Length: 76
Image (cartoon, rainbow, N blue to C red; front, side, top):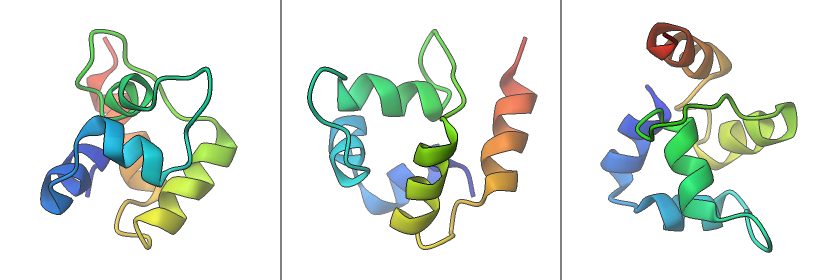
């Protein structure tokens, strides 16, 4: 399951998923999550600490392989 599929399944906005992942402060939670969901103009792969947090929050519904495969397939 991709992070975008997980977000939609849970009915979360990008911002609220970012808050669940513990993003706060200077960084915009919504923008960061949208980049990791690969729906923003700029696509990014999360850093190792955030990958671990994504695995925990999604209870392994989104796996490292899911994150990597979706990122790899979206790379231009």
